[in-house]
Image (cartoon, rainbow, N blue to C red; front, side):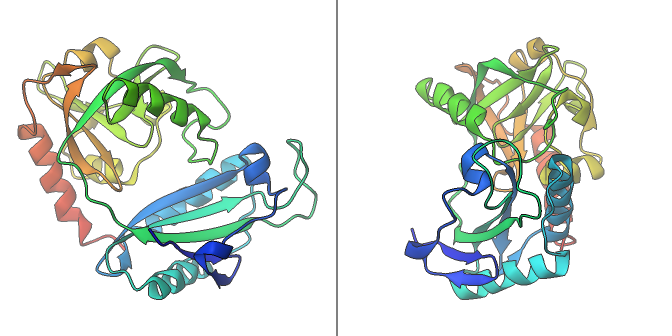
Amino acid sequence: MTTTWWIDGTLVADAQATVRADDHGLVVGDGVFETMKVTDGRAWALDRHLARLRGSAGGLGLDIGYDDDSLRAAVSEALVASGLRQARVRLTVTGGPGSLGSWRVEGGRASVLVAVTPLGERAPSATVAIVPWTRNEHGATAGLKTTSYADNVVALAFARERDADEAIFANTAGMLCEGTGSNVFVVLADGTCATPPLSAGCLAGVTRALVLEAGAAVERNVTMAEFTGAGEAFLTSTTRDVQPIAAIDGRVLPVLGGSATAAAARAFAARVADER
């Protein structure tokens, strides 16, 4: 799979796409990123993604070094160079060349990378496994989309060993939090479709926000028992859209793509055309 790269203002051939060995993103995972879906040659919900990128960078005290118009131009340039109409764009910002420790070099400049790859097929449903590790909803990076993904790598390996597609975290309070790259929605016993609030430590997903804004679900703390015993549940993310959960820890859910999932999918689809 060929990737089109834009790195610090320049289009770069795939084989030559590199950053310095002392880049803080490589050395200590000091960086933030966004993944966007491209449909008909346009990066969908780019404004929302850029706003979240700035929020994550602000949480790390990281100066991106480009304004939003410049970032939009970078994404557009990479997309045009790729020639793809349906694609996946990853916009990454790291602390740039720096020390081999946790401190940043004073006066340093961030590294900014745009990568464009073909958009893969989305599975019609997902199976999930609950991992034995928790998200820290009180941590300094809670809710930030950082490049420090080692927890997710370990969690996904745990899930894959159990023939699951996604790993699900509780938080330190024992409440449902999120997946490694997805938000979780659960149909509760009273019929309410709920997703954990941001205070639970989950990422403020763009697709999650659109489902909530459309009134297809509410924010509410969800216990792990409510999740594991649910009859219907689904995941959301930029590349998943609204994706039904078929099984939790090997237990097949009695309802796959039921009325709540269908309503969320319709509400999301109705909002897609409005996002720029």
